Image (cartoon, rainbow, N blue to C red; front, side, top):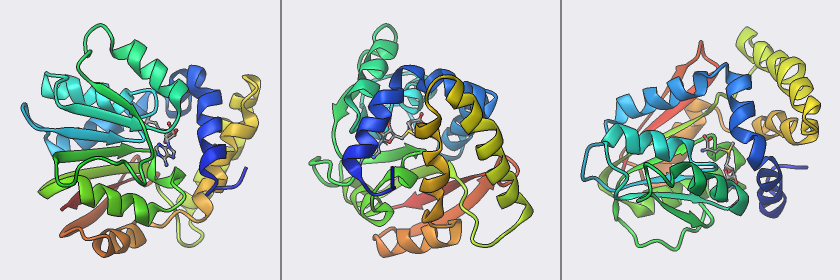
Amino acid sequence: MRPGNDKAIEEMFNSISSKYDFLNDIFSFGLHRFWKRTLLDILKPSFGERWIDLCCGTGDMSILLARYMKSSENIIGIDSASKALLVAKARSKQNFSSIEWIKGDALKTSLTSHQFDGLLMAYGLRNLSSPYSGLREAFRILKPGGRAGILDFRSFERSSIQGLFQKIYLSLYVVPISSLFGLGKEYSYITKSLVNFPSGRKQVHLAYSAGFKKAKYQTLAMGQMGILLLEA
Ligand SMILES: C[S@@+](CC[C@H](N)C(=O)[O-])C[C@H]1O[C@@H](n2cnc3c(N)ncnc32)[C@H](O)[C@@H]1O
């Protein structure tokens, strides 16, 4: 599968939704929660604010956000994969039932402009057919002054030890293990999705072109992950 095909991406995420959280824990050694928590610590969402989680998948980031804000009111999670949303709904039913899960396109949400205080996107930007359009849509739905944090794999502009480490990690760890679960093809997509994914410097540039007033990029996980921090 090639990046940029929205329908194929939706089908792929539907097909991996039941094993997604389990594999995420294996592949990141559970650290993805720490990285997501770091994002929240930087953005400091507060009680009463209205937040959206774009490309929410099985709901990990939205639920973490609800825990952080000590309330699941005023949180929307949006994703194009309906099976991932079913997992999110089941996970949040007991303690975070006010989170609203919407099936939709992050590039074109149909939500009213300037309504959110904050926006999150974890491991979503890389999967969008146009990261720039995703950032434009994020800017449109945020209130002026609203803040956003976008977490994803880091993309390397030129060859480096860190880039080499990423290739080895993906091809010798992620793909072989996912193959054991019959999902090797699906997980080999991560490498493909990184080929044209903009580097941190380029993401900052795209964010300014999309209208954001402030944009900065910082790395974590020894340079393997990146967070794009934005102010509308
Ligand atoms: C790697 S998963 C990340 C899920 C979740 N945010 C997390 O961190 O666990 C990427 C998600 O982006 C969603 N996605 C990809 N393209 C999308 C689009 N155009 N609109 C909405 N969701 C999209 C996929 O369905 C998938 O659930």
